[in-house]
Image (tube, rainbow, N blue to C red; front, side, top):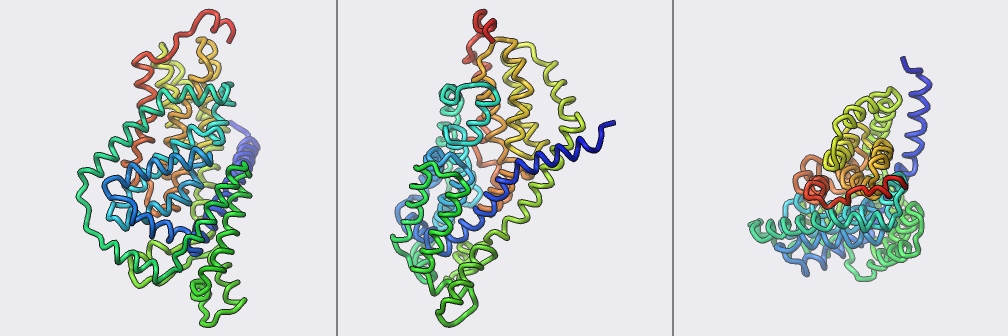
Length: 424
């Protein structure tokens, strides 16, 4: 017996809030394509396969992604840039793509969770009422053991994995045949890093990085652009068409080797449209769950089962994962989870950092493991690996919620003091 206008209002609000994310998705499609065609990613792959060892690729991929994500504050940009290059290096070294994707995602979400510039970190701490830097320090109790265990597992896989022998020379030849491999292309990621250092907004950073890659393509890869345009002669018209097609739609570059052709193929902004449509559907579904009161009914059942600190933390973690499954959106899950338990934590005298940490340990890191969430669909599209295929190898994302519960069971949670409870 809920009014239809309530559903419409919730849908409009939720889809409106997702508007920036949709624009970011389109720009990620544009940036990943321009970074590939400009030669940035091929150059990173070319030198990366000569430096990295198959044994240490997975832990290195995880660490590199973690460092970049901490500096940028976003897992999406990390995966769309350095993540794509690491996928290519993994393929060249004979490492199965799901393994590499799992390591990249684990590192990217480690940084997304701990970076003070991350949207999820800011959101979780603000909704719970915690100071952001105290929140980050509090997360170290669960995050450091989780990433350490993940790195150990990736190292074990690298040590015992007997991969197929790959002709690295063949990969290098194919990349040189298809692109002008030059260290000058690395000016584009350097420029992007400078924008991030200046704390430029994400939309502007992605746009300017894409435009810089377009300029790089015009200077260093004109023959590639002419082929993409379907022309035979170099002209302003063919270069312009090549750039526009690269930004918008699918492109293919003939390197003479089928495996590399598939690796350097791009989809542009059009390749993100299926993901955007699914996100809109997930937003509408989650909005209806909230407006109808169904979600609150589910959470009331969880609140009744809380009798101790362990059950409180475990319930928070469980509902964070459940909200990702139901809401289909990482940010909505964080907001709902923190809002549901905020009064309960305050009534028991616990610091808000415990709530924000439990929320991040669950809602933030598991969103990428759900195929119908914005994170799951985006990373699956960018990396070219179905969500359920890379899921078993995202060790950090799987271990984090379990570690949060384990830390509570072991008693690494401060007991609420009388003064603290009174203050809250």
